[in-house]
Image (cartoon, rainbow, N blue to C red; front, side, top):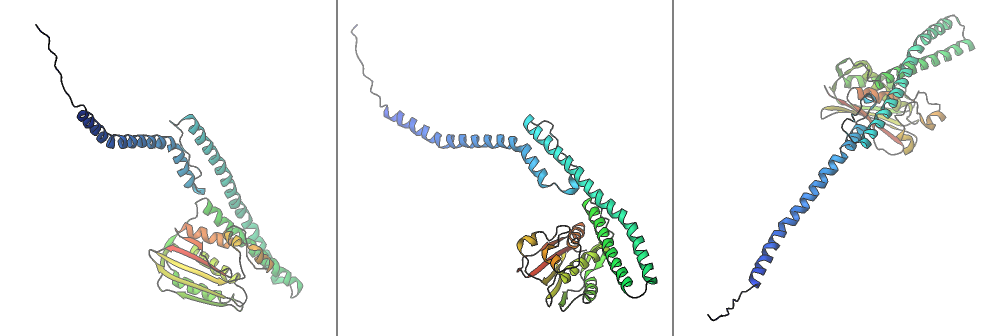
Length: 320
């Protein structure tokens, strides 16, 4: 049987082109999908890895004097993160102990000083009744002023220690801020010395507050404006209704105050060099106490931006 030969002709270019087209189309979504899955996996791994650090960061941001007793749990964390959380909790324990010791010291000192100061005040008043006119009377009057100043300091220290410990008791009731400001401004006119004192008070400003503490808060801010106003300067108190709040601005002309001094306005016992040089009466506790009372009521006292020769304190209180 004779053998024949056959020839098959095939066009290989067409399948190759078709295969290249299919691969090209597949790559247009396979590569982005792979990149997306890789990025997602990396994000999940990073999130799981950073979770303890994020917990630690949020805890540090939320840390306040009233929350020093809160601790983070290191259960289930890696050894490195567990050690970090343990170190953080140890630091909080030390801060908590130091904070409570300082708070107790202020409260105990204020309590211990109240009784002897009251007795001393009474004895000085009795001595003044029997003392004749002259040097002895003047000396006793000076002693009485110093005792009254110490009594004021101890009372403020006691209130500050209660505020630090979150134990400032508020007896809230509706208070007419407009009427209270008008009365305090009328009294403040007696303290001015060639200074212009004015008030722009909107009527019927009512807040739910402790009447005694609110009076002290407003009196501290007015007294501060009068005390540190330069001779011949001006003092203005403006009160208005704001959304869900009452805003009161205490502004006064003053000797130029630099930015560094302004940063310490609310520091306790800070009065600035100018106050000491000009023999300005005060304890350096008024603004600090005013801010703590405002915060206890859910409000705030802020130092507004102003020219160097002016001071503007803004008090914000929640309305009834």
